[in-house]
Amino acid sequence: MLCLTLLPAAAYAAGGTAVYVSSSGNDGTGDGSADKPFATLAKAVEAAEDGATIYVMSDLTMTDCARFYSKSLTITSGEGGPYTVTRDNSFTTQSDHARSWYNPAMIEVQTHTGGEGAGLTLTNIIFDDARKHEGTVFAQASSGKSEGDESNKIYVQDAIIASNATVPSTITLGEGAVLQNFGGMSAVRVTDQAKLVMKSGSVIKDASSITRSKGDAGSVGPAGAVWLQGGSFEMKAGAAIQNINGSAVYADGGSVSVGGTISGITDNTDMWQSRNGCAIHLRGENASAVLTSTAVVENIFGSDSMNSSAIYVTGADNHFLTEKGSTIRKLTQTIGVNCVSNKNTKLNGEITEVSGAIPLRLDTADVVLGKDGIIHKNELASHGAAYVHNSSNLTIYGKINDNHSSLYCRQRR
Picture 1 (cartoon, rainbow, N blue to C red):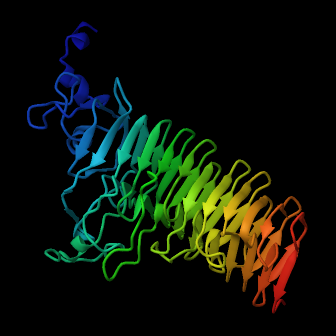
Picture 2 (tube, rainbow, N blue to C red):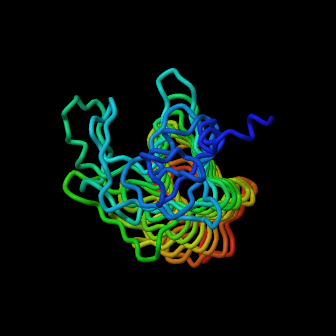
Picture 3 (cartoon, helix red, strand yellow):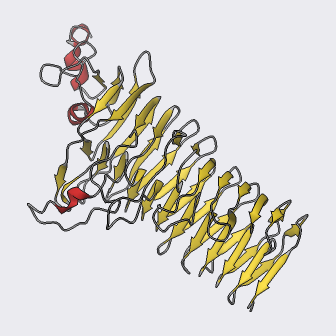
């Protein structure tokens, strides 16, 4: 025990327990100890061993991606925090086998094919994209680029935090973790075997001044605060996605479970797939989303009462469910739930306080309003509480009441 207490601080850091980062540190002469911290997160995640905690001891400006493989790390603020980590005006491109040179996220959590999983946990710390981006085209970087092909440099970064893990891996936003003002395609992107978990006390948000644009020719537009492509997203009670310009959750495949609060969303026609899905946009194949009993979707502000949607569900094999206790409320010129070419939607929650739009819209869709589902207290547009269109089926076990009218059916089967 005497030998252990006499070990220098550098040995303690090298053991995988703690690594320190400060703007006053030095990547060249520092060793990651509290006395000799590194200067960048990129160096810290490279040096940290599996299971290490990285302590950020000051506000930082990042110019390089902190990318790591097949290990699990925690990043948190040290004494005096929470501290803010901000994307610099000029962020370094990097390369991988799939994309050649591209514009990266601030942090990338990756795995080796057939190897071990990876993990990242953030607590008590703020990551701010500051609405900055490299590249000019808002679209997904292309895979399969050969060495020397630099065309992916025109595409903006995919996220603040990203993972393309090929074995199960988890990004966890814990108490006090804040991701704000995403400048690229999203705040968090997860694909394949990657999972995002937002725990109570975590937040993804925009400053009130943020407005997103589509970008140069070839752009599809930003995706959303959370972007899934085959990955999964679990938002627990007490977590929040708030004050977002554009979409909150864009799920192109994968699974979504929302038990927290999505609020203060302003739709934006420059987002990917245009207006649809201000809070949740579910599309692709074999995608699913559920609003659990603690979920609240509220204060959504639309620009087109027939196209703006709090929840937009498309794809015959995709599944959407609201549980008893979930609430969709306080929507302005925004459809509550909009189902297009979808056969697997069941509503057991509440849709209320919709103004100037339809609470429930079906277009070539089959929807069940379950016994605990209720659509009530809405200031309705001309198409009623539920608009059943183009050979759609609405099965009602719950309640549609206290609205100006109940159903509007057009070409109903």
